[in-house]
Every structure is written in C-alpha cells, then in structure tokens.
Length: 575
Image: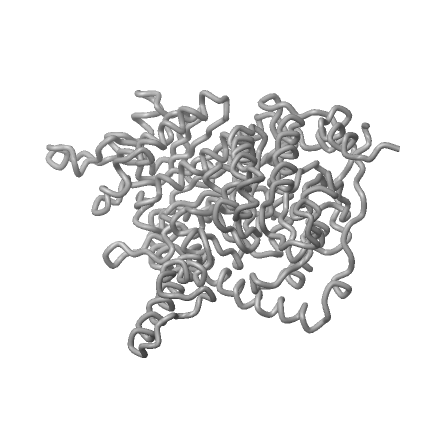
C-alpha cells in the first residue's frame, strides 16, 4: 500500500498527429500568445517613462525595481491579476493592472505573496477593482499560509471614482479585514512604506507584524492638504506622519531606514527569520524531475479550435514528473480522468476532461461524446475529490468542458443529485485546489469542476479559454428559437424578415463571442491570470511548492495511509 503505482503515460508528439497539424496548432497559438506578451509589456510599463523619471527624481525606485531587488536572484515572478481593468478607461485615464502588482515570489527560498502599489500609476492610487485585487491576493496567501509582503506607496483612493471602490462588501475597507484574518490565522505580514500612504493606504501596513518606513515615507489619515492650518503652520505630510512620528512617537511603525534599497534588504532579512519550506520533507525522498515528454509540446497537441479533440492523458504526460501517472478508477466514467502524479517531486491530484468520443457502457450504447459530465464521471470525480481532501493531496482541475449531460435519461439517472454531491465536496474541501481553464469552461460544468465561484486558490486561463454558459451560436439559436424550425433553420420565407433574423442571430453570436474573450474575464476578475501554455508546467511546480511549504495548518498524510488506496483496492476485479 505504501507504493504509489505511478505508470508511464503518453507518447511522442509525432505519433499523435502529423507534422503539419502540430505546426498549425503551434502557429495559431503563437499568434495568440504574441498578443499576450505584448499586453503584459504594456501593463508592466505603467503610465510610461515620464512617470518612471518622476519617481526616480524623488530618489525612489519604481515598484517593479523594488520587486526585482526583493526576490531571490534569477527567480521567477508569478503575477496574478495582470489584466484587471484591461480595456477600461476612467475619463482619459487608464489603470493598468488596477495600479497594483500582486504576485507569488520566492524570497529567501520561501514562497511569499507580494502586494505592491504601482507608483508609476497615479502615485499608487486605488482604482475601481484595486481593493478586490488586493483582497484576492490576501485570500490566496491565507489559503496557502504564505507570508505576505506589502510594498506600500499609495496616495489613497482615486477620488473621482471613489463610488466604485469605497463602499460595498469588497470595498477598500475589506482589505483591512483581510489583514486581520491573516493575522488571526498566524500568517506573517511584513510591510515596507516607501512614500505617500494616505487614508486607506495608511491603514494597509499597520496590522503587519513588522513595518519599515523610509525617510521619504509618511502614513497619515489625512495629509497636509486636508488639514486646516497646515499651510500657515508650514507643516508637510512628512511632519504630520513621517518616520519621526510613527517610529519614535506613535509606535505605529517599527524601524526607519534611509532609502528603498535598505528597506528591501531589511524586509528580506525578516523573511529569512521565518520557518523554512517543508517541500523537501513532503517529497518523501524523491526529487523534482522534468516530464519525459517536454512540456512545451502541449503547444502542438492542444488544438486552438475548441471543436477539435485531443487526448487529455497526453497533456498530463507533459505536466507530471517523468510522465508518470496513477489513474484511479480508469474503467468507470471514462469521460473523466482522475489520478495522481508528482509535480516538482510533490504529489498532486489531477481531474481532467477527456475529449472526443468514449465508450458508453453506462447508457448501454456504443459511444458518447466526452467533454461532458455524466453520472459515473461525476461520482468518480466526487469520490476522488473527497479522497484527496482526506489525504491532504492538492488538486489540479484541468477544464475543457461543455457542461452536464441533459435530457430525459440524465434526469432519470439523478444527475442533479450527483452534481449536488460534487458541488458540496468542492465547496467544503480544505485542501488547496488550483483550476486551469484549458479551452472550454461552459455552463454548470465550469462550476462543478472547481471554477472560480468555488474558490480555488488560483484559477488560470490560457489564451484559448472560452468561459461562458454556452457558445455564441448555441445561445443565438436559443434566443431565436421561436423563429426556427426543428432543424434550427429560419422558418420564414419573407426575405426582409429572414434578413432581420439572420442579422439578429449574428449580432447575438458576435456579442457572446466577445464576452468569452479571456482578457474580458481577466479584466473583470472572473479569472486570476492568463498564461501561455508553455508556462503551465512551471506554474504548477510553483503552486505545488506553495501548497506544501507550510506545516501544521492542514493534514498531509503519508502515502501509506491514503484513502485512495482503498478506492483502488475496491475497484480491482476479484481474482
């Protein structure tokens, strides 16, 4: 039982498709991912070189320069929320990434969540969705028990848009509730204050365990401009709430440092004092190994056209270490693949949607389309999800789903009940769950497979992701159903009426297709980040390490006592 029966899966890419098909897939993907990289660069530039020079003119570093100094040399930064507010404008202004950088970073060989106001965007102001983005990063840190580092340089709310960021359940004040929850949960919080910290920006660092202030920093409920008489008294905001006040008088901050660089050094030294990572312990003597089949090959085997199928096991073979995988209950609910593999030497559970056509013993027919949830598949996923939660194994959900089975037979078989069981399971799981929307994420299937409403730690999209209740053409047919015959063709013979219906259906389809753009989802915070397919394996390795870094806050069983072994034993035919 102690042995986890990992077996080789997958095959060489040239055996999966001919060279021209693989190249076509790569070429179409490269075009989409080229746009991704261009848009990332625009976000990283903030408001441009003029504002970078303005920051440097004050003797300060830009936020991204601070981040470069903070992280371990040559270590990656995994940003989340890069495209929040993408495509939105506020008057003549835009707020790239909502004016704040939130990212998973390695500091002193420990994964941390960094929340840093972008001081090249309206002096780090909070825009609509800035509070929600900060809160989302705080939620990620709390679920994974990762230390949080705040790089605070915030002039408060962008007041012309205050009605969209101040009130409401997730308004700016909710950040401080999250600060408190992190503190109550024992999650370390370290803050560096680098400049303007007014109103909410001033409250943000105070609950942190350690607070550093540079000589240029001030923390005030209201600055000199709002305090009557400040001008006649020749007071500045620095006089009202600078390090002389808050380090030596109010004790709202712990230490003062001369400049940005020194503050970063001191923050790193604080992180170094924290317990180290438990990753090596949970590798159980194994080490991180690359997949046998290069992970970049996913670019060729995953078609950009969502109507084309592929083998989900081949994707798994390019994500898990050495392309070794233990598929659980392989002969039941064939439309779903569930099982365990190592990622970076750490055990992770996987749930994936098969594509194409699979056998259908459940319905006593020859075959059925995959990418849909049927009774056996739902039951299998529920049992697997519960077992991973009991065993402490983090779960990766690889979505490419059209939805649930529908019709008379589906209702008779009780899909609503089985679906409710899966929803309950995923709603109450305490183990970290990570969701990846490979292509289609449609209807209630998106919910059932741990979509964002079911609070996975992180939900990633690709440039191929289509997130919606239903496809544009299908929705257009549903909207104009009374105008169509049984074959879904326009029923009228009147040319003008036919043209009007055709135009209406096309407009509906175009609008829905636009709504399914992953950048729109990311702009609205309906997904956390858009990643390139070649980045998926590195992301999963990092998330696995984060999930196993801390000790004591969840039960991680050793493989000898996994309940998954019991499921396996009961699924093997006797004799």
